[in-house]
Each structure stands twice: as C-alpha cells, then as structure tokens.
Image (tube, rainbow, N blue to C red):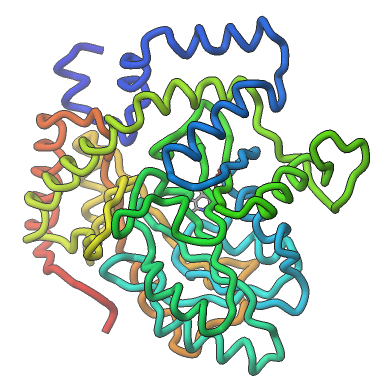
Length: 390
Ligand SMILES: Cc1ncc(COP(=O)(O)O)c(C=O)c1O
C-alpha cells in the first residue's frame, strides 16, 4: 500500500506500525525461547512479572493466560462463591460479570456515570442494600477502568471500607494509567489486566496478569493458576485452574514493554486532538481530576450513531461499538439483580457510543480525515450534543 493510501485509510489500532518500531527484536526473543525450550512458565515469564511489577509499583505481578482468568483468579483467591454478592458495572465487557457467575457468586449490576463511563458510587450504595434484601453477603466490587481511565477508586474505596467489600480492579483496558499519581496495579487489593493484542500493552495472543501488594495473596494466585500447586510442592493444595502464560508470549510482551512508556503520551496527544475537533459536535470523553488514561478506546456519544457509522464506513474510517448492549440486556444476564437506581445511563450509553481509531501511531493527516468525516456526518444529520440519559 502506498504511503498516501496508508494515511488516507487509518487503522483502528495499528499493530503493523508498532511492529515496524519493534524491528526484529520480537523474532529474536521468540527464537531464544525456541532454543531453550521452556515453553510454559519459562524464564521470560518471571522476568516479565518482575518488570511489570516494577513498572506499576505493585509488590507482585502474577501472570496468567488472559484477562478474564486474571479476574477469576482474584475471586478464587478470596474464596468468593455461593451466597456472595459481587457488584459489577452494567456497561463493560462481558468478562467482568462472567467471572462472578463462574465462581458461583451472585452478580449485582450497578449503573455507570455518563461523563467517565465508569461505576456510579450512588448506584453502588443502593445495590449493596438490594443485595442484603435478597439475603446475600455483600462481598466484592469490581470497578472497571473503561476505555483506559481508572474508575473512581477514592469514592469506591470509601464505600468498600464501610461495607467490608473486597476491591478487584478490572484494569484490562487501563494498564499504564494512574490516579492521583498512583499507577494502575496499586489502586485495589487485586488488579487484573489483559494483554489481548488490541490492549494498550498487548501481546500477539492471549495473556493476562494480576497485581497485588500482599505476599500471601500473590502466593495463592501463583498456586491457583497452576492447578492449585504451590511452588516446589508436588501436590495440589487448592482447587485451581490451568492459566499459565506461555514463555513465547512473555518474551513478546517484554519487547513491547520496552516501547510501552513512550507510547502513552502520544495516545493522550491524539485524544486531545480529537477532543478539540469534536467537542462542539458530540459528547467527548472526560477525565476525572487526578486521573490519566491510556486511551484503550477513544469513544464519543452521539444521538446519530448509525448515520455516523455509515459515513465513516463510506470514507474508509473504521469504527467499533464498545458496547452495543448493557450487560443486563444480554440473554444470560437478563434476570441478574440490579441496583434499585436502575441502569439507565448504561442502557443509554449502549445505544449511543461509538469508538474511533486510536493508537500511538495515528498520523495528524489521518486524524484530520477522521475528524472531518465525523463533523460532516454529524452536521448533516443536525446532531446536538447530549450528555446523559434524562
Ligand atoms: C473490561 C474488560 N474486562 C476483561 C477483559 C477480558 O480480557 P481477556 O480478553 O484477556 O480475557 C477485557 C478484554 O477485552 C475487557 O475489556
């Protein structure tokens, strides 16, 4: 593809541009693993865990097979199960609620804030009362750092403290972000992240990790991800799973982690450029005071999503919808308990959000094309900026 054509057709997430930056370092790292032959939990896994812990400031990082398992392992490590209520936002990727069901607990949906897309604390307080009414023990809250911005851990932490709730952060989209100067990985008792290829720190396949500051929790996580076997112990101590990270994936992530710190500021620059071009025509994302985002997605809210998606398709601008349904509207979760505040903002957002191309290698020319396409589509559909459900 010619350079001009490449610029005119932006990628949603440009892994090819990143690959160019990486040169042949990934091939060399993979080759090393092929030569030593320790394909599962090999030396690269330990090195990656140490480097990730160091990067985040958390005392421990325990890698695993994917971000969903990272959440599940945290719940398993605390024995969350039948009779326990697990509070989850209704507007997130399905994995957040899945894990509560998988460990036999009862999920309770909580509404989100239309400004940050993250968990609403008033809705959480009400949901705790509702769980008690049903005879459940309020046990755990899983705040999600949607699109790359940390949830409001200050306010959620206060409520968690008051009700003795465990906080498990779903940071699948936010590794590399921070709140009040504290990095993601240190904002909750457990922090689960994903290295799915499209994530800000993504591998070339599945991968995940749990961060914690507690030695005993880390030891248990290490056992649980390997069939419940403690290090150097021949026997299984706990009911566990097979959720080990491959050495090849760890080797790839080590190379990508070298690049990662330099990829974060360009993401913010691209978000700023979008905000400047689009704030007058659509609801653009907002950061909380004290928060930074890694912009896993750049997502706007508009009443004219279909017209916008069509115009983008015709102009060769890729878009995606994260997420087209609030979780309470999906078949397995229709009967799930919900906060008495209702889930209006979650449902409202699901009908209106649309994500635009976002990655650190997005050129100014490509971004100008995207902004012009969005502006044209929303101007001709006489769009007005909307901020929340009525
Ligand atoms: C918010 C959220 N939670 C959990 C996950 C699960 O991660 P994985 O796909 O690595 O299992 C994802 C991944 O898309 C996610 O976006």
